[in-house]
Image 1 (cartoon, rainbow, N blue to C red):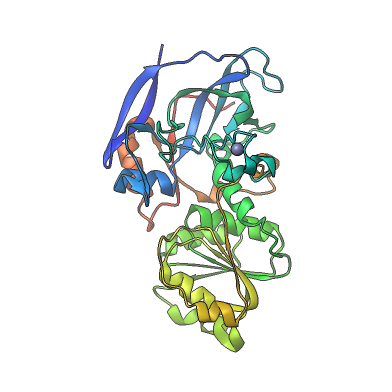
Image 2 (image 1 turned 135 degrees about the vertical axis):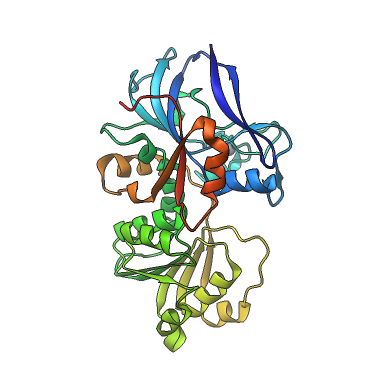
Length: 350
Ligand code: ZN
């Protein structure tokens, strides 16, 4: 028996191939994948052969946002049944290093993050129609959630972690720069956390329309109406918190002008090297906060999607069957018409 897989051999060399299925061993489950979301990092691997220092050095099965249906249970698996819809947590920290010891699991020294080219050999990913994983990666849904929504547990975890750094959001004015999948999910989290005023910016109208459906009170196309934000720069800045989800140097500089003294900017987007006006950061006593992945937030993301407390469906823009993976990757990079693009696999939704 073979499974179909989506494997990247080099930049712009994405192939649908087959591999033998692996039977689940003790404490493992075999999952028939239903949907897998294409992430910005997958797109960097596809278009550029890597991100910054991380390079694709051997063929890698891509994908780290997937949900599917439990197909087989290994010995000793409790709490899961055949037919359960599950989202798979790509994060698997060692539990023993000095960062795991202090519950900073996302900084684990030997993290096994699926679909990542960080280590050699690369950690293989989730874009395959049958996948066997440790059962602790599988988080079950109790309700009939669409598999593509279930697959958004991973990016939603990123946003929940970004909102976990001790920054107050309730009754605050929050600016989110960038309305892609992360910016739009960030909008849902910030709205859920009770922000009083939530503004989302982008260069394109389509993702802004999605951000609005995800909870943004105001959306601004900074390419068409750059002056719309001018009032937010008044009196040293009117914004309490910024979630920077664009990775765009111009957006970062603009947002610093809109932050009030004592405000915080959480950097969710990844910009690489970029000049920053440190005088503004210093004189306004701005807190600049990095955020990286997640770990315990994955279970919380599943709970929020399962219960309907956060509705992720507005970001689901397109789905392509696995055999059209190249078309899916090409479209996923088009910000004018796509937000979250999924590959779909054979599994029937429960
Ligand atoms: Zn560790």
